[in-house]
Figure 1 (cartoon, rainbow, N blue to C red):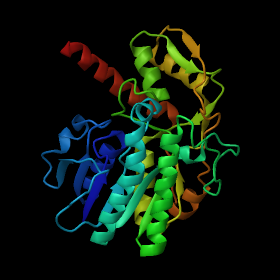
Figure 2 (cartoon, rainbow, N blue to C red):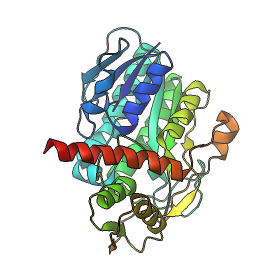
Figure 3 (spheres, one colour):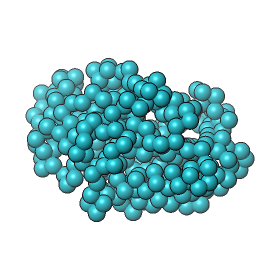
Length: 316
């Protein structure tokens, strides 16, 4: 069994490569390294069933030999990244999805799309069920990511309905864990990096907006269950335990033991005020729900960041 994983050198993609290898798959990892990093998969390079190829999936993809699954995870995912690379974000959602669907169709393989909770935009319904169509500003700065993923979902379902392609769609809610980039613009990496560096922690708005955080191993367990299921409609995977951003910042500050202030900055345009998954569908059809409590996941992620910063200091 051979899987092609796009964005495989990214945070989630690299963990997915590991999981697929553990499950006995051969893995071809494709990444153009715009936001991914080859160091995330460097420990896999010597694995006999792993291969890395530098590839922009917005361009034509050619893969020799049989393929049983195509998992499309390529895309900038943090707001600073997709604001820095707006055209690339739209292209990987549109052209990249078209190319990977074409590859799956040609190989008669399963297709798995990594979509996002951002499809719900700034929701007027909480928690968000898969039946909610969302509240998205298509021409706002975040629209490049939101609409790229919404379009990718529409194209995936079109290939399923028109070509009979065996497809899956996961809507991923906030996920965290080792291999996130330091200070990558998302809440947890920013908070940990700032606290560990002795800098003020930046909170946008009044900090009363909510998020829910799922540890990466829980997310991957849900993804693999979805891959093995017969479900074609979008499925939420995330942790339904909601927390305000301010409380989250205070937890990180206490964990690190950092006596640093919290600085408040204006809320970015279209920043969601609530983000919490309704996972009743995942519970029902996959028998899945998250197991790692926030305190445990935070400690594991903190240890990773602490080691990374220590290594960075030693290399200077």
